[in-house]
Length: 601
Image 1 (cartoon, helix red, strand yellow):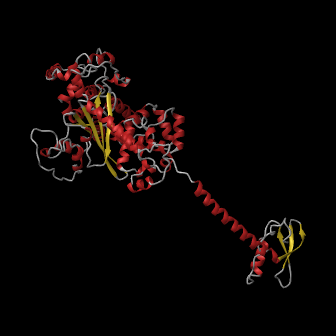
Image 2: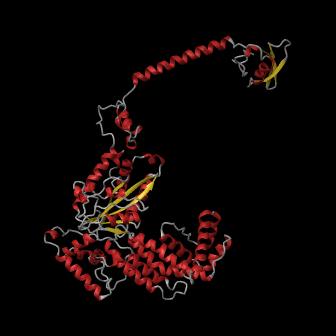
């Protein structure tokens, strides 16, 4: 058996306990040498399992020994293997080469590590510095410092800027986001940059030299903590040192250090905040979700149909977004997909209702029948069409005010005036279900924007924009009042302030077609001609640069937070420290990341 090289037992550890007898088909017959009465055993040529079972079953108490040749062969193999290992270690030690600095940074990305101890440990790794210059340990910091330096220069060169601010929570951390906005004096284009997305109790305004006389306004949403903070710390003639009492509202103490503009003057006491503007888009959203919804839900003529129509729409949205069968049925009925609304955006609800009303009622009920939803009746369908007809100017105005690059503060007043006029005009032809809704909307606008409608800043911002001038004002008395304000403001400007206001070129921003349709004034000149005229009147231009620096809404800082969510999407980025996270986010928002990517590595 030991000489049978075709058998699997050749070289087997216990092959010397068996004796080959003969071949039998694909198997072989052997005898066990340990048995008192030798018996023949059948085993496969490719396996020793039967022989192993024989030893385990019949000779379990017998001490088995390995074949001598096998023991010697194993010992030789172990010695040979040990020799190779020792030789490999010596060879590796003798031929080891120093890593290049770039290779060390690739293997150990210091830009994602903030631990000083770990950075110090990595700095001890020997590197080859004969042909490569040693770079600084973190290129991200260098790129951010370069971006921050350039941004400070640009902001310092501006006479008037505005800011938007909001708070955001992510990964159990709270951040304050701030963006700064201004109008380029040469191109008259809206410019913006993010200056902070950091934890509370840190300076922001003073870091970029944003003093009280430079910041014309700070735009935030309508949350009570912001409203109370600006109410308590607005710039007034006499300073009050009274502390804010705790009344159960959100603690606003942390906002004080955020907006501090002068740390060197101890007489200032608490911080002095710039003028406060409430986000117009957020205000309109509150109107749609409060005044409008409350009236529809309480009015006897609309209460029942409003609840039933919206409930059936919600059932359809739920089916369409969670069922593939529903999506297939929708494709058979309509060529367009349904829009599923977002809870935090009223515009999405309007778009969703409008998409349903674009379909014939017969197709809608056919879809409802296939999805086993109660069909919509004529009254409910008519209510949705009237609702969308009345609210259409509302949603167009909301889109206009949320613009970032083409929307100025002077756009707010004309937008509100046109919105109220178009809303009142939409009540013609509606039924009793919605006949009082236009008056509710106009009344809510006058109430919530009462401080803005008669505001000097808002009026001067609108009249100094060549696009609007006085075209949006119908009352002669109000025209005279605004002319008086503009004349008084122009006379207050000195010659020195106007010296550097004449640019070389002008590149007017494009205007969306929906905005042109919304502002349907008589004898409206082209946008290019209007903008070119502004450079011929330095006083009007200076007024426009100052009062139009603010944005009507805080949409830019919301976009900053959306970008922050994308930065934190990869799990590895959730371990970023606060400082590193802010650097990455601000460089992305300010569009410096692409230009400096080669420096970051």
